[in-house]
Image 1 (cartoon, protein in one colour):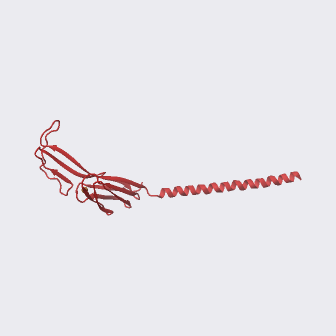
Image 2 (tube, protein in one colour):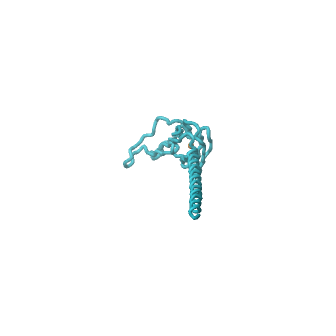
Length: 180
Ligand SMILES: [Cu+2]
């Protein structure tokens, strides 16, 4: 009788243990599946790239007359392209003259197709700029202001950005490469 009870007890315990083990297996499998599905969702999220683009002008200041280590430099006789992007300031009464060239810094940006791209244009030099990001945005920015443009790079190729009042040199390019 005692033996019969203990045999039954062993069988019941074994069944209970099996049930507990299978529940644990089921829970672990569920957690695992869930984790891998979270991983899959994360990898499908677009990559977000942020850039800061400064408005800049480079000034080359010199003189008709030599001074210290600095040699004399004559004023150029050939004109620079029109469009506002270049400024030549003629020699003053001391012989000092300068050339100015407007540009964006950086003037080339590389992203991949599908990337969400944020461009923060920062007015650093120059009173104001009338900027166009080809097919995306058109805006005026003054010194000390920031204008933010966000878009998805849908197409492989190039997107130009330029300043209407400082052409032809205040111009940049976003290169959109195919997905890696
Ligand atoms: Cu400009």
